[in-house]
Image 1 (cartoon, rainbow, N blue to C red):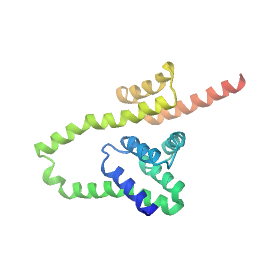
Image 2: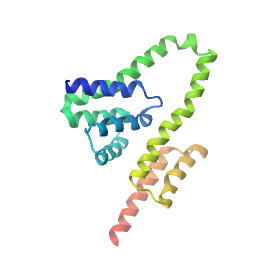
Image 3: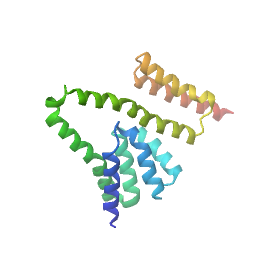
Image 4: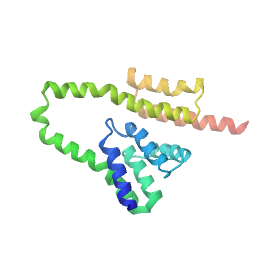
Length: 178
């Protein structure tokens, strides 16, 4: 089978069957990419870290990197389109019909039912990544405190990122002196 077709279908499948955005796609992307041998588990974790630090849609960033690694620029375009097109068509359909169905009791129930599933889909990659990088007890304090500050104290994530970057730089400087 043609590599481009395989890449496209793989990322269309990921784009179609994940609800909750980029972080919810991580387990599916990892399973497809690592199990097929396109990337090693360590390479995927490195890619995950790089994709998080770049602007743009997280899942699309990952798909572009995978496509580029396997088939250069054409592969990255094919993978990006495969990731984006399902969401594009779903949003177009919702935009066309939403005013007619937005107050439907069944639609409201479906959206309320999806919320816990989305939380779980986002929690799984967080825990998987934490296990993969071997976070120790005290190291859990930073992500948990950050999440609580954002959630309960309405602290902007921008401030959390800035403080974390400064903390990382200071930690690195301190470790280099030893």
